[in-house]
Amino acid sequence: MKSEPAHTRARAPLALALLFASSLCASAQNAPRANATATKSIAETEITETTRMDATDHATSSQESPTATSQTSPSPTSPTPSESPTPSPRAGSRATPEHDFFKNILRDQRAIWTSPFHLNRGDARWLLPLSLSSAALFATDQETDEFGQSRRRARISRDVSMAGSIYTTAGVAAAFYLAGRAAHNERARETGVLGAEALVDAGVVFSVLKNVTQRQRPGHDEGQGEFFERGHSFPSGHATGAWALATVVANEYKSHRAVEVSAYALATAVSVSRFTGRNHFLSDVLVGSAIGYGVGRYVYRAHHDAALDGDDSAAAPRPRRKLLPQQIAPGYDPRERAYGVALGWDF
Image (cartoon, rainbow, N blue to C red):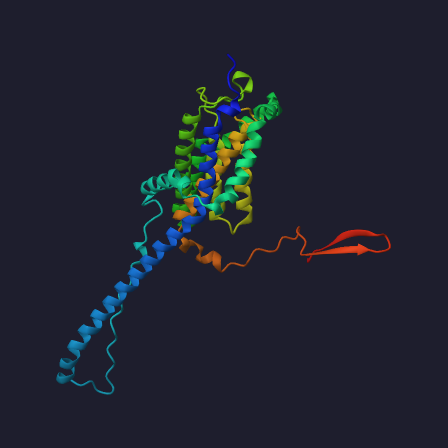
């Protein structure tokens, strides 16, 4: 009996993965709202508490002032007594980024797995492009797999993909954290904590999807890529982890163009190497990268400390890209009867 084609048996797992990937990207846009609300409530609480303490001090001084006036009257040359300073919150009262590490992971997982139920029409900008591109790659997985059949390319790809292994990505997050603590750099410290949090969240997501879909890898059964055959190909775990960490790093250092570009470039290289090394199909890599990007962006926007951006807000704006034209104007030559476009650059 002839078995069903791979693409007909994979509609459910593919739809599930695409739904999660697009909903994660959409949830990252809504994450700052909760952060802003929490910051506002904390600020209002501090203001209320300070006002209450000021009122108490004022009432106490009002009750004691008549007695002091009746006993002695200050001479014109006597110094005026200084007022007691108003109590202020301690500078070190803010929780460290690793204080709620495990609680944040539980909150992240709840937000991740319930995100498909919070999609709306505006989220189509993530769902439609991802669905169309993934469907196109999935339909041509068997044809595109032939491009990766090269021993030399597979050897190079294996070396490049090591940058996306759990040991490497966890080591990078740990390096940021330790360097931040040693140098008292709060941004690097937070990058390490949020990077590790994103890796854990991404690891849970792709592990569950791998065990549910059970897709065969390209090297098995002549590259059929069938689902529910005890495989672990869909989605790519290396691509998911690399993009989760790269997104956190890129957002933390978005004012440093070189760091942002390097982070995304390295994640892209890892993702491509998983295809050229015949470890995954292109659809596995794309969906894994989208999930990693969504997880990393959500973790950053949900748990990033906005106080660290105080120095960046006063920084000089980015210079305009000189590669893109600043002036575009249509042109027409009546003698030659030719149309054209005039481009202008400002140097």
